[in-house]
Length: 451
Image 1: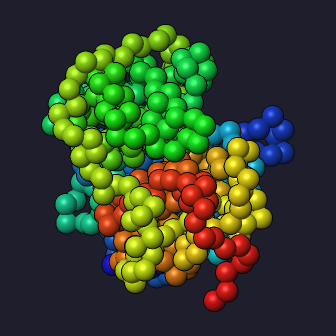
Image 2: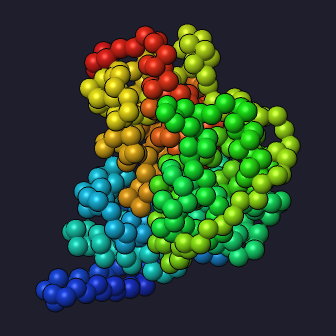
C-alpha cells in the first residue's frame, strides 16, 4: 500500500463547542476561534466524505509512532495529515512561506472541514488559532486518546519509527529510565557529532552526558571521504564502542549526527538512533544544554571485524556494476544546481556534474548543508508519505534497491535513515558521492535531463 493517502473523512452532527482566544498587543488583532469538539463515534462514522480532513497537531514524533502523551497506543489516524503546533512555535528562517507551502502540499485548504486532533488539549488550540487568522472557518477538535484507547480502531505508524528519537524519550533515557523501544537496550550511549574539537560547536552547548565525536575522525581531511576500516577500528577502540551498544546521536547540525549514525551502522553497531530535530528539538522541549566536557571511555573491544554490515555502503566499483541493473536506482540528493552541473556545491571541490543514470531525488535549496525537502520547519523528519510521493513523481521505483548519494555522504545519510524509518530496507548509501566519483576521473554528464 502506498504511503501517500488521500483523506476521505466524514462527520455527523457535532457537539460541545470550545472557544479559543489568542491575544496580541494590538486588540484589533484578537482572534476568537470557535470550534466544536467531536466524539470518536462522530469522527469514525464520517470517514467517508472527502470534504473533511483530519490533521494531527501533536509533535511529529507522535505522528511517526511514539507515545508521548500517555496514549494507549502510538501512531496516527489512517490518512491523517500532520501540521504540528510546534512548527508554529519555533523560530525558523522563512517560516511563514514554508508553513503556507506545507498547508498547500497537505491539502489543508479553507474549503475543507478540518478535524484538529491532539492528546494534550493544547496543540489543537494553537493550530486552530493560527489557521483562523488565515481565514479558515470550519475547524473542529478531537482527543486522539479516545481513538487510541479503542483497540478496534486502526492507528498507523512508520515501520521503524524508533530510529529517530523524540527529545522527551532521550531525556527519559538520560535520567536512567528504559522507555518505549529501549526496554532491551543493554548499554546506552549518547554521542554528539560535529566538526572540530571540543571547543567548537560542542563547547557552546550539547545534550547532557553526550560525548563529542569530531567528524574528521570518521572522514579525515583533505578529501573528507569515509575512513578506511583500520581507522574505523581504532575509532571504535578509542571511544569504547561495542557492536551491541545502543547509541543515540545528537548535535546542533543533525546532518552530522546522521552521517555518524550511518557509519556506525556500517561498522556493525546494531542499534543506532538519532535525535529527531537535533539539539533544537531538545531545547524546544524545554531542556537545557550543558557545556561540560564528557570524557570518552576507551578500551572496549568492538566485538566484530569492521565492517560487520558492509551492505550499508555502496563502493564505486559496486556502483559501476549496480548502475547496469534494472532493479537499482541511484538517488542523487543534491540541489538542482549541483545535479545539472551549474555548481559543484563545495568550496574545496571544483568539478561539476552528475553520474549518468542518477535520478534527481531532491535535497535542499541552499547548498550542501540544506535539506528542506526532507525536513519540517522545526527540522524534524518530513511526512514520509510526502517523501515517497516526491520520489514517485521523479520516477523512482520504491521496489528497486535505492542507493542514496550527495557530495560526500552527509545529506545522503539523513535521507537513507528516513527511508529506513519508513520501512524501506533495500537501501544503501553511495558514500563517496559526487566528490569521490569525480576525483576518480570517472565519466559524468551535465545539463538538465531529457525524458
